[in-house]
Image (cartoon, rainbow over all chains, first blue to last red; front, side, top):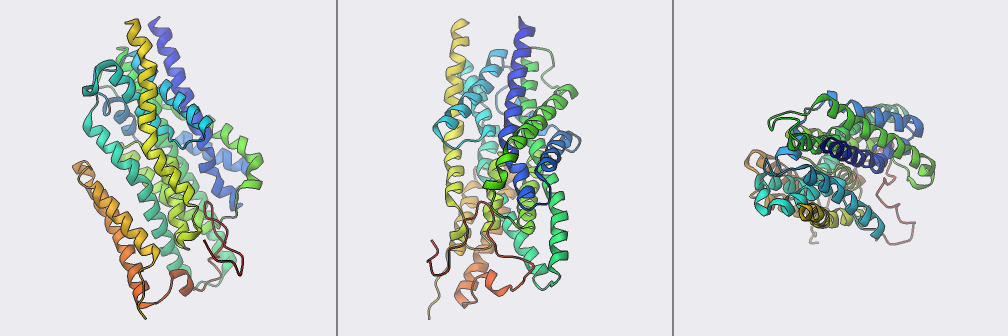
Length: 331
Length: 87
């Protein structure tokens, strides 16, 4: 029974990872396809590949934060770890249906917290861990914004007298391959680790691993495979609509935004801070757009990010809290 | 003629204030990040303020380069048509 429950929860967690890659695929491929640096098919494969190999670049610090830095040791049980992602998935579906902004990453954190509080009360949460995550919910898109703006301004200063336009654009297109790969690495390194953290917490709760254990290799590989497949399937789905929806983007701007977002994600993955990759790239694109004029920015997009900050963690918290109640009633 | 501080300077100033407000809540080992982002935002607020006050005009008008096209990018809206007032 315990083994069956374990397998079911692991599959739920990996499904969460797959759908995370699925609906974030556009972030990874939109710029390189819009600038025609890569064809849509190659762009999907490019992003999925770098999502997968991110495990070779990053340590599992984000996973450790999820498994050990949000909820006190000993609070996690199979039921709590099941209710957490379940609540996050339910919150994602609810917000999709209602058209509300959300962040899957924040929903997972809120969900884990809600289930833990339903089991063991408010003192089951680790204040320092939550503080770190809450601060970087705001800081990560701001860092992306400031870096995106700064990178593009510096590039414009360096090259504004350069007259060989074709050669310059060829150079930026090549650099965009690198920046797109770096962004996909950061995406895989940050988002796959959230699922790894959930599975690690589950294995510790089920006494398959000691509390001090690191993430096993099979968990690392399965999480990165799930997010890579999600990116591949999600990117493939939007390939057919991409021509009609993506507005023209210049290689220099795409390169600047992706580089800024990638740098932010690299830092947060290294520091063990789970952040929203969607919000980070949105901040970077707003920063790049700010080099022209503020009135040209679609502030509705930025506004949705702010609403997601306020709604996601409390909303997922409540849904997971409710999802755990049947387990508490069953004893 | 008195120059007004433009919206970009105010935008970056507000961003700097938001980052400074986060400093007390930030764990000590990461406070340098909040300070750094506040400093960078403050730097750009100051640069744009100086530019607005001395009347040099926005940055994109002094850089005349065919290599850096001025077409808008996602999620930036397309430029207004000639003769229409920008929103």
